[in-house]
Length: 503
Image 1: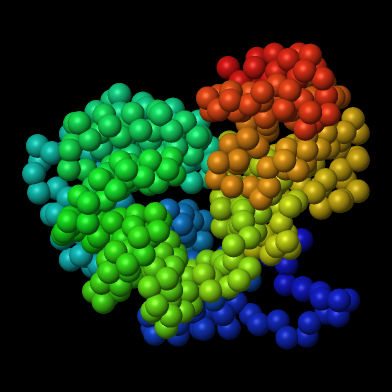
Image 2: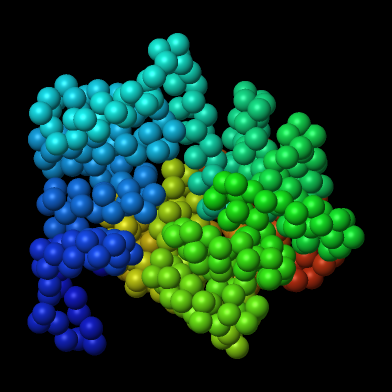
């Protein structure tokens, strides 16, 4: 399905009413003026899908992203306007400067603000740009620090993105390098601990936090993360001792209040969670989807059902895929995986890492929302896919092209191995995503070296076996061999093959 197609067909009937980009643009503007940012985003994203070369639509959507603190998406649009759509819209230079300042990338902010003043000496945002330059450049002797800060924040953002998408090993590698170069950058310790936690290496995760709390004893994020780790390890006595201290904490920063409330909710201390999260709502705090999720959970389990329903309504506006997972829904206990999570799948499809993009295509093959994902405005155009990805997508969509471009069935076999892993590990969780990423990475490395993938069960079993081994989680060869219906000797043979591609 073409991303910018204006013809929709349902059950063989072409719809006669096709609203234009202008129609959705006007609805988006009205929603924006009502401070309905979620509605504005939805309408403007549809408008830009229909009118991708209209700079006014792109600019307005960029401003909505800015308000929603989606700075990367906002910056991409402003840069596209300046590079491709309408270079005369110099106000986009100021908007970029503002976004980079919010991100803490002060060197970039300074450059864009200066360029804006140079190009539009009588511009609408001239005073704002001058104020911004004053704030970020008050002390000339601090200028030399800008490149260092920019490098640090960019590395941190890249590693966080990898962490969120399940590429834990690559995220851990970057966080370790950040700590080596910036040993006082405390948030890197917390994120590194989370990376090991998601990999299942509890000992390393705890060690990292212990090191952090030795160097920075009052680090609230570290204490909260440690509480979560203790909860998952069922170390109840240590957890209770830690909670006694946390219950006495009275943080000043909004960020810390939210962290405290979310931590209490995650470990099932709903009354304490509700006290903090509901208090934030009274302050006018507009959180992300996670905030509304934990507020709804804690409100429901403390008897505040109306607050819970209102919070869930906000959550669905931000994350429609959460529908049906309400705490009062009897069926919500069913495990929910990445299969129907549109946003995270689209991020994987656009990753700079090939194994992550292939994993994203695999998720699409297992999703009940396949059509939604493929027709989404953020789905890559076919021109952006590599040949391997195109062939795999054709396989997933059961297109005739799959046989034309994959005559030896190499891509098909990679998918079949992933299918075998999926039978044992579904739905796909944050932890098990590492297994699938590992398989696609192995497949790509093996393909470069002419590896033949004939014994699919052996490759699946060996991948799982090595995955557990790297996580320091004991699984016997007999157990895994039995599940995949192969012999232990075959498992050992293929584990050696797998290991050479994991170095």
